[in-house]
Amino acid sequence: MTMKIFLIGLPGSGKTTIGKVLAKAMNTSFVDLDKEIEKEEGMTPSEIFAVKKEDYFRKVESAELKRLCQTSSHFVMATGGGTPCFFDNLEVINRSGVSIFLDVTAREVTERMLKTDLAKRPLLAKSSSDEVKDRIEFLRSSRISFYKQAHIIIDGDQISVNEIIRLINLKKGTLT
Image (cartoon, rainbow, N blue to C red):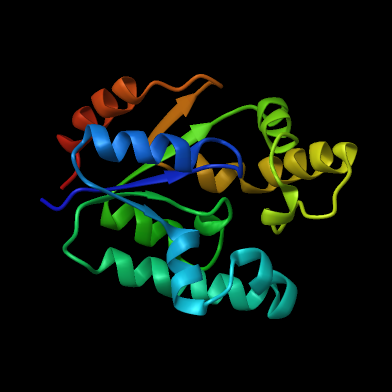
């Protein structure tokens, strides 16, 4: 069975950071969906949002996700925070591999976001600290119903790669 692992969750929940470590621990490749879109489009997600708008980005994102899911490659993928919430992306993810929701609190995500370059975060660019907090809370409440459909939900602000691997191995036995 081809093993594809999809990390989903809010921006700043650790999908990329954990994904890289998890891929290394599992001796497989790491895929950052936003970076794949950037390669295809020649623009960062932030630039696409600014120039071509979110609707265009979401269509490209969905097409790229489906393309990657159709490959025979094993990988750990960091999806964009909104990826599972548009079109049939969540269905595609859950059918193609194991989805893992990194359920980090809105407070922790806000703290992490305020330490990064918000200009690189299309939904948070040009936001004040209070606006970032409000936006993260809004994103969480509007997306949680999608995220909670993941095969594995990992709660908490401190997430262990070893625990993720253990849960993946348990989940593999139940997938057909």
